[in-house]
Image (cartoon, rainbow, N blue to C red; front, side, top):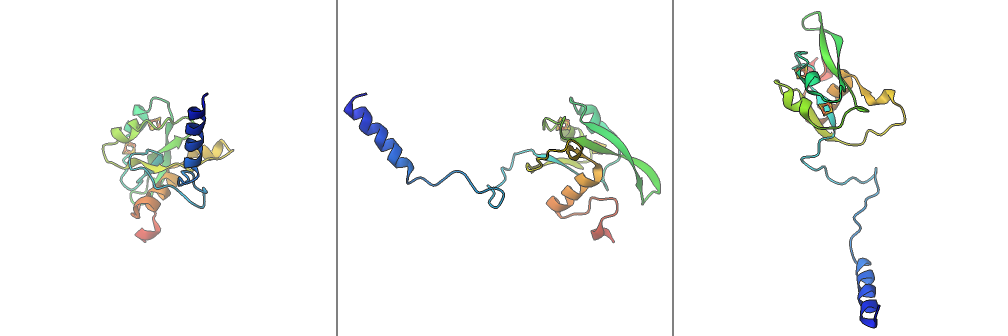
Length: 145
Ligand code: SF4
Ligand code: SF4
């Protein structure tokens, strides 16, 4: 490397001192959500009809239908439970839902060292829906009472 090359590399190095850092102090600071980021699922249990089209669309068999008592009908109904350890966040389940009650909601921080915690029952998905959209999604939402 000649003298010119050395000066160029030093110039590039010193230029970095005046750049704004691209990293943030997560979790205290967070970068804004990207509008098209998929993230984990949100479910509106009040709208879900238990058709299992989401489960049939899933190429990774990450969706299992589980029964819950629907207080409105007094009958058992089926709702999706999602195993995030199997999910590859392709969004096919969201596309398959005819009632728009299953969405990938942009939430990305759900790291855990427990396999069980990666299985999201419908109530957990519905709580996330309520937090994200502020509308009732649980079968017995507090905001419904
Ligand atoms: S995002 Fe894809 S892999 Fe994940 S549950 Fe939906 S269909 Fe299955
Ligand atoms: S989330 Fe949608 S596709 Fe899945 S069972 Fe409910 S209504 Fe059917």
